[in-house]
Image 1: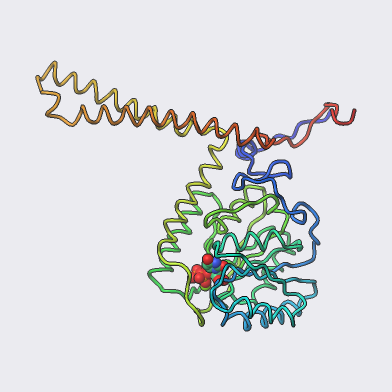
Image 2 (image 1 turned 135 degrees about the vertical axis):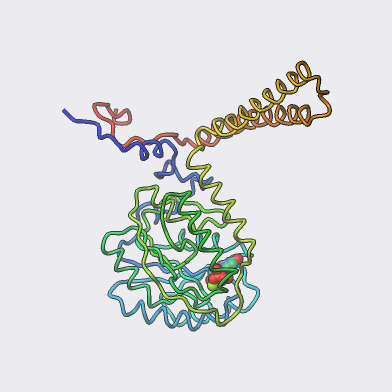
Length: 364
Ligand code: UDP
Ligand code: MG
């Protein structure tokens, strides 16, 4: 008799949240059913698609592309390079046009305005035809010579190979220390331990990104998403060079964005199909606090004759009561949104691995 395969507890819990995507059930990071045909299964498995987000990098581009093409031509596999011009205001686009005229493997996507690195990478991934996708920075800080090692790991059977800039050449305190703390935090919260989420140079098997939509600064979290889809993730040290041309596009404000994105990822993973538990739970706690403050206030008045308004308790009671009620109401609104999210687009809150002894309705 056929047996239903039991999934481990965590995987089952996760499968209820549609992180695991199918064409009918895209990732919750996204809000669209527009899934690229190639990522939905038509990618050429051996083709390597290198994706370069470009924002005001005119001086670095020729050097980068010459080196990239030299390294990739040395490999025994087909490749394409997709440069995404993210609304550069310098002459990055003319430079790319000129290079594309001489390099048959180079394709260019030109955004109408600056949408950010995540959007640029997303566009590159959407238009990539390769079975392996390798994003790389345009500023020559990543070294194309590390790509063969990344691909080697993919050939070993890993689905995601993450670059780890062991000797980072950025400002030691402002960037490196903050990034080390951020990596620890992201690893802890996501349960996917990586030393360098921020390194753009990584290699992905295209199928683990099927249905993926990215927002905010979420390109860093692709390995988390992939790992939740059951991908095998590993990390290898890569070189890192100081920036020679142009300037970094980010400051410390990035930390705030990453932390907020991390909260979104955590929320979507745990509460997408039951937001009332989060909002309602904190609302209940607040109501409980409000009742405790109320009774303390009454007891102090009755037994110790302490006037209510000489204590902060009336204010606390009222505040916590209001916060509690509002949280619960927000939870109810979130529940309605979740229903719209799932039902309007025909998504399902669960995924079935196999149906045993069911007749296929559509077979009739
Ligand atoms: N980038 C982009 N759009 C932006 C900001 C950055 O496409 O709005 C690109 C940029 O051209 C570079 C990569 O993203 O290729 C990483 O940016 P940067 O080198 O400034 O980041 P850092 O190395 O300082 O973390
Ligand atoms: Mg850089």
